[in-house]
Length: 273
Image (cartoon, rainbow, N blue to C red; front, side, top):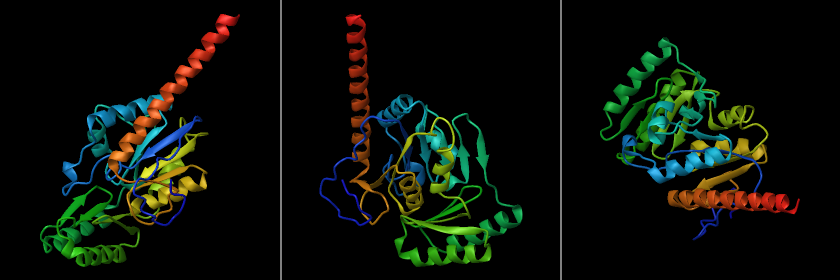
């Protein structure tokens, strides 16, 4: 366990301890529940992991949500056949446990010239990829890292031109999104609603885009888990995506053991009557 904002890079990071109690689970997707791929469309969450997420959701009475930079539509495709509460595009989209969808939108006078500006700029940088998300844009350069400075300069120019937007840097990506929306705000909003309210929040993420979420959960005295290396506000650490899978399995095993013990105690009490 790493209880620090500094990267200690342990060889075998121990799992964060989840013992009893009522928890609300929040998971980032890329780099947390799914391995990062060169192309965003190639990302997948393994079937057994999806099944385990559903089991964990049921065990926590539905208090499990996906918190991602991806649009909710993509999150549903990755989680199929299951549908979880979700915050997409870093909180610009939010679907609560009742299925109600709330979405921030950009006015046409911003969205149209912004997209034109980004398309023109990215077309001049071979190997980069512009991902339009409706109310936000992701400028990917994972397959063209030599163009990192040019991509960041383009993103900064766009934000300077449209002050209602902000720049969020991530792993080989620069994201342009509406101000006031981030993963921390999304988690805070979920924590005010059933079935999340009154529980201890747990947030697992891997990237700079997750730091606002870590800060929000820390403020709520919850459990924050960083996946991989790098300085972070998270108080615990897991080494890689497959460690997240193992950790989820261990939590489910603990939950099954606890249910078995509870049922045994009930049976013993009933037999003593």
